[in-house]
Length: 239
Length: 393
Image (tube, rainbow over all chains, first blue to last red; front, side):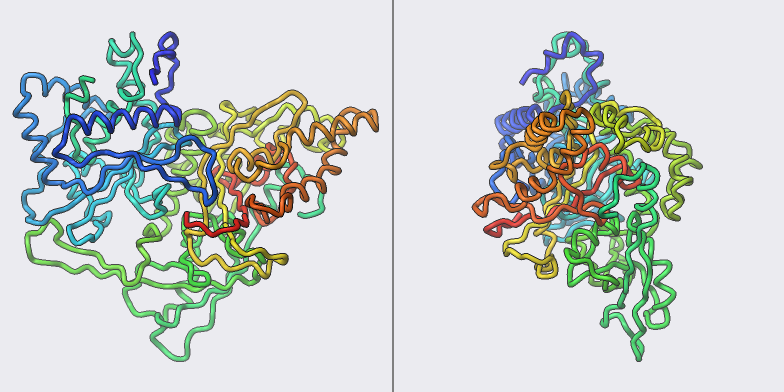
């Protein structure tokens, strides 16, 4: 779905998505990710009805990337950068104007000090309250032991770990996963609409021509992914 | 409150703020280190409060029997660990179909011990919570956790109502503290004073404005509430808890206990008030918008009201007063209609409970929201639904 019907009064756009735009964007994002990267686990749409009777809601579910090997992902990112140095840094630079304004340092993702393998599950859930995507995630060791909040910062990029220490209650907290009903970590979505608006309107081409919900999800992921140390391949950013 | 006419905003809010549930808290036997075991603690828990806030009051009474190093306390009811971020009144409405007084809860304590390891692992220490049901409950670090859960909910409500949460984000530290303390201490006047700065307003409905002029609402002007004017987005923050039962029951006391959170469906989705000329958006319409599947065989409540209204008007030849009457008439029709409609395949609503009362479905939703919402501006609705076949959520 193209959001460019909002083009004419895009300056009034509040940076949010509807549920069906989210679904369309998330599905397209997952498909492109799958085509571009066979080596990493795919994102998949998990249809999931919350009601114990036949649902009449058109789309209900979330986008999921499970058992993402944290070390492999970092090596993957580094590898990717070396391959595409001529265009890579530009894209990354652009993607990092997240409002927090901290350029992302890939090297910090790598927790070289530990020989253990850790995994991460990432779910992107639509928030009906904020009308934006929200990231839920968990980190666990190879024996399935979940990493508790006190230790989670060791698995985050340095910049995120710093924000986590400074804003313990308003950045990453444990909340109930809306579908799984179990405690997961989540990134607070209260500012998402605002920074998404800044991010997308800062791009003159997008601001002039409108953008698709897929581009919305990619841009969103380019910021949120950095917080948890997952880099969006720049081919996706290029559309 | 049952049987009373709709009170003014402040009067009803006062009932809510003063509402409390008598709790009888037993220390779980596995936690007792001395004999004889300590007697249970009786305490009045505010409806709008949260269970962890009672811990400082309870702990001293159990302290003699507890081993040192107690860190976290959590509560269970009939084997179900209670989610601390749900207001106490909502837990009671949801889990005690037939209100139990005092409400018998069991408290558990967890010991927190840090085990230092000498290796250079990524994890140089691990925190062990003995027996804490971490797969179900989000850990609670006492009052601070509860406060931030409250503020994050308030932020979410503000976003739903105004389309942004700047007023909450930009609150000064002292105001934020005062707001939290007003909730903590059940000080409604202080709460109203501070929260009016958030400009979250009250919900107005054209229908309500119209009927304000009628006898029913003559006591209630909008200034009775917050006086902040209508909401901007027409969206109302609602948290809906649906308890599904598979067996039918006639008396609430025969209702089966809730033995797992998987029996409770939780919907955190705003309700959009659809304003239609001459129609009142009712509580039934709100529930219907969240659970449309439960209303498939029954005509829309709005339609039903308008049908009865017009019949009534024809009979009585009265305008506003007629519609007031029709609400009364409607009560019985709809109670029967929604609850026991088709004795069939369709899931049926057994019970709707908000702040301990069982409001009629045709009450104007704006009244319900303005008067029965919690201080974080969410309206918590508990619904019991009978489904024919138990399906895991």
